[in-house]
Length: 111
Length: 117
Image 1: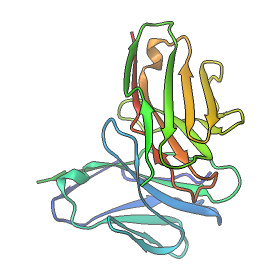
Image 2: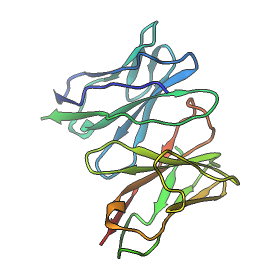
Image 3: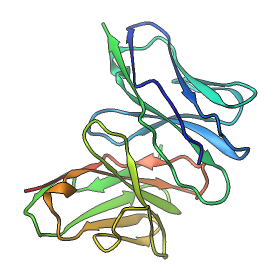
Image 4: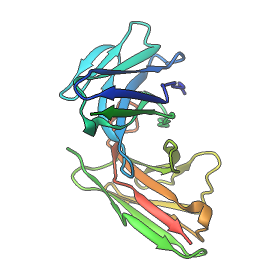
C-alpha cells in the first residue's frame, strides 16, 4: 500500500488559490490518486481522481508529475465553505482494494 | 450523483446493548461497501470491506464477533455493534462503490454518531 503524506494544516483567505500537495513516494504502477473533502460530522465527499498529468473538473484541478510520486490538489478562488479536511488516497486499480486514509490536511479559509 | 444513506444518524445506548447501523445505496447497486470508524480529530480508519453475498473482510485489530457486518443485497449493508461499551463511542461511516478497484469512486454516507453510556 502506498503511504501518503500531507501537510497537517493550511490557512488561506477567500478568493485565493489553494494548492495542497500529497507525497506518495512508493506509488505503484496501477495506483490511482483520489482526493476527498470532509466537513465536520459528515462523510467524505469525492473531489477528483487522476492517474497522470492533469485532471480538471468543475471544483478542482489535480496535477500529477511524470514520476507520480506526488500530486497537488488545486482549489481555485476558495471561499469560507471550502474550510474542511482534505484527504488524498492512493489505491490500486486492480487486485485487492484497501482504501487507506492518511491524516489529511485541515484547510481553514479566512474572510 | 450517487446517494448513500445511513440510519440512524445518531444513537445513544447503554453499555452492553447492541446497535445496528444501516447503510443503503439509494440509486445504484454497490458491489462493495466499506465501513469506517472515526474518532474526534482523527482520520477515517477502515474497519471492514463488505461484498454482497459474501463474508466481510475485517482489518487487523477489528473484532469480527463484535462488529457484525451483513451485506444482504447490492443496496444494503448493516453494521451491528454487539455489547457496546463506552470505548466504542465513535463516528461510523459507510461508503459504497460499484467496483473493487482503487479507480472506483467511493460514495460516502453521512455517518452515524454512536454514544455508549
